[in-house]
Image 1 (tube, rainbow, N blue to C red):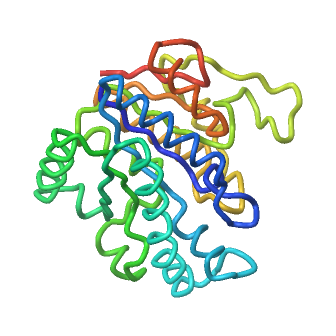
Image 2: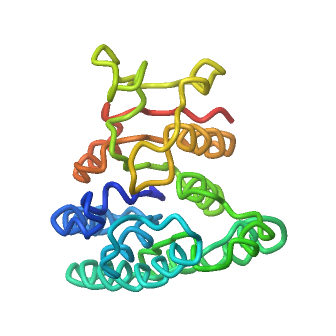
Length: 258
């Protein structure tokens, strides 16, 4: 199986913005084991800005773009150092790929497809993030992807992945917002995206992340349109990836529609 796994900032870091060491170690161990079992793995990882905030000892996530981009530049170094060290302990080589929207659209897309496919052939674990350090004006000109849920879906289509897994700070999609409605029930399987489901999607769920259920449903739409199934699962339990790969009932499963 060719698997794209996306992990968000709120999963990788504590509320302080500092790295959640125990969780990241568990994630890398599980992904390494999945790779050892014969599957191909691409990791789309948020966390550069959040880790930069912690590394720079900033009190909160910056609201101005220059500081946000500076934090991303610092945090991306820390993020890749951590992944390189942890995956290296399990004898796996990582590769950093930073993308903008322009890289995965039009004629440039073929370059990314070739690079990622070759990295997988060489046995590496590509780790992908959006290039948050470019200027805001340039990002707008290059049709920036805007969030890593969308980026993960686009990457999955680029490499013809078999499955996209979004590891989030929530167990999946509910009938209502479980943070405010105790009667909300988890939806285990969604055969088709409907206008009703799209209307339920809200904004960002935490101060660390930039995506919410709306971006995840958009990712399901992109992946599903290319024949790729998608799962939303709780990132606090990376070991659930074993059950997801085995087709067991974990999180919310979005069936592709192609």
